[in-house]
Length: 432
Image 1 (cartoon, rainbow, N blue to C red):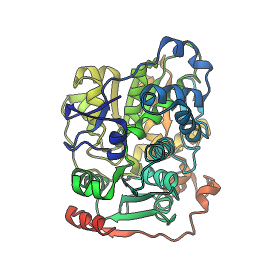
Image 2 (tube, helix red, strand yellow):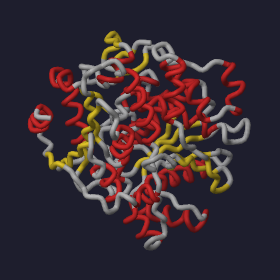
Image 3 (cartoon, helix red, strand yellow):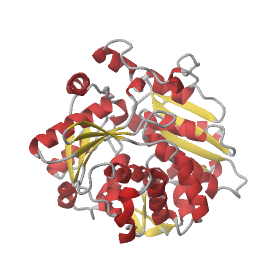
């Protein structure tokens, strides 16, 4: 299959170029030339398939022309080494737990798949691969874990100073080895702008053999579509879910749309954001106005210029009416989010993180308007990753910290200060 730029459909590249170079030279994003559809034979049996079988079917639909089946199955099986269970909180109120991977966040699915696919694509290369990634919270930790000690790779993670939780920061800065963290004196949008500037500098990108691990890379998006199908099959036969997606850079929601395009029966999508409501505003008005991000307690969603919006537009043929017929948007502030954390614990005896709490608020609002709906809220990270917020709302020590996160607490933070100046960042990369 070939992949084209969202800015220029006539610009096409093969899979290796799309995955390893990540970003077209015209600053668009790569999309498959033809979106695959899973056939009727799959949809006859999909509810009886295991997670890995679903993942393989989806991966083969996208990448089967370029990656042999045995290699692709090994990539998928290694990625899906943990489950994504649906938990029922009440009638029609479900949560999809995506935090059972090594870094306790949904980004583990995409990062592990991407690391394995990139390793296969570069199996005969002798060059060092430089993985460049911006993070607003969980992406960096997942990428660091997925690529740590992978031969022939080095990872550079940019994160906004003072805008990630303490344990998230330790996941980025405490591994060492082939992982380097840059503490950027700015916002996530500034981090993302620095990453994009490096990829658009074609000489620099080629010399450093740069690739991205952000959701601008298709290898991150496709595996996230696995768990939408896996989640839907956990509901009773005949129930079409409404997926409620806490959203920042909108890669997760875009993956859900890909699952729908593959043929998954979905009733609707709800994009749930914090005060950074650029996409909900677009869905209300038809006007897209990116703006500087605002810090919130749901920090991984603090994005004012979501990269994947252009992919969402492409999936709906640039039609606002088509998009809003399948996707609704809602936003909630920090006070509402804190109240939701307390309410979910009181009503459901369930601990939900600040991002999932935003989603839960949107799901409740949706069900109030559509009482026959069954919502699945994506719980994107373990609440233990946000101890300050959870302790404030539920009491000190209310959330037990899993061992794989607790061991990071005493490790030393190692991060390099970085300004938002693109020339300074370029010079730092040149000197790597």
